[in-house]
Structures are given as C-alpha cells and as structure tokens.
Image 1 (cartoon, rainbow, N blue to C red):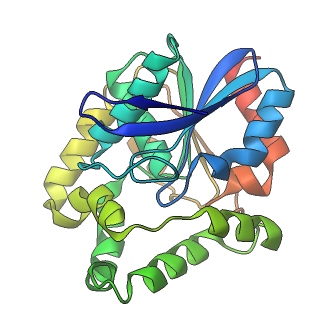
Image 2: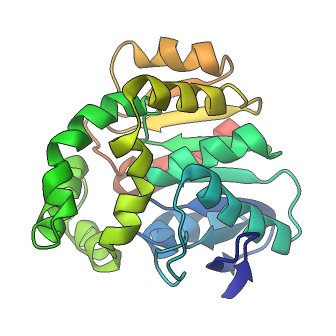
Length: 259
C-alpha cells in the first residue's frame, strides 16, 4: 500500500502485490483497485507482480479535478514512474479500459488490454444524454448509478461476487459527472474526433475483450484506428467477464502476452 502524487497534485493510492513481471490493473468508474481482487490473486499465484491504483476520486484516492482521460492516465503514469516501471503491461476495465487506451496512445507500454469498454463514445453519448437530468439530480443520482451498473452486469456474474463489487462501489456525483463531462457536453463530432485522435496513437499490442457485444461494425471501426487490435467477445457474460470467469481471463491474458 502506497501513495504517489501526480504532476497536477492529485494524491493517488495504489497497492502492489507479488513478484515477477509487473502488470498494472485499472478499475472502472465508481470502483477501486479492490474490484480486481479475484484477478489479482490469480495473477500473483501465476508469478506476476500486480500494481493496482485507485484513480483520483475513487477508492482511497482523494477527489482532485479534472477527471478527463488525460488526467486519469496521468494518475497511472505517476504510479508507474514511482514504481520505476518501464513499458508496463496495462489492463483496464470499463473506464479503466478507456484510461489504458489513452495511456497507450501517449506513453510507452508493452501492451494494453481493454475489458468491455467500447471506444465509440459518441454512441455512448446517446444513452448517457437520456439519463443526464437524473444524473445531475442529487436525489436520483444513486438510483440511476445502481440501475445502470445492475443492467450492465447482467445475470452471469454470481450473486456473491456482485454483492462484493457493490460493496466496493463509491459513487461520488461530482467525480462521475467530471469523468463523463466530455461525453455529456461535447458535440458528437468533436467527441468522435477526440477519441479517434487518441486511439490512433496506440502502437502496442492491443486486446479489446468484451462481455457485452459492441456490435458487428465495431471490430472494423477499431482496426481502422488501431490496425493491430484484437477484438474478442465472450458472449453473455455482461460487463464483468473478468469476474465471471477469472481463470479463463487470466489464461487469456497470458496467451495474449505470450507467456
């Protein structure tokens, strides 16, 4: 357990476990490094050193605006730099998938794995806009967040595991709205251009693994931006495929890494 400070002054908490080849795990929105526990434990048992941060405003890291992807990627850079890592392997789920994608486009990493986060944020904008009034209302915000993630999780995740994830969740309205600010406020064309500009800088091996099918056209779209990207769908597993089948997930990471 340790903390580090980013270039813009955010204090970032992170945990380091195990020895061996380092792997950085980045959690989703409203969650924390502890969400990764089943995957972390298996990676440690397999001989990896796992570094798992809490993004600013999440877990044990203090709130610190802004919450754009560049700043969140800066949280990971601060942790990686503090730990003296060179070209780390990075794995992110949901928001963390977008963060490691932004990181891979601007910082040297060995590989990036994006778990169930479509980078077509202009499509996500349509869905989020419908919920915006309720998201901005403090009274309805907790209910909207609970409903959103319950719907995304689906039925595949075991009830006990879902209860564990829910117990970890920290839904800070200011943080969530800060993370989603660009999606909520940018014109659709501007949002698409920003995502495409960031993704086109990714040159490392890249795996996009989904439990919710992003659609038939997504693979072609992503590979136009990241030609080396692998897109894989584990159908029916919902938003948390890595927690529904953690053994399979760790095995897939190892095959992707060539270990």
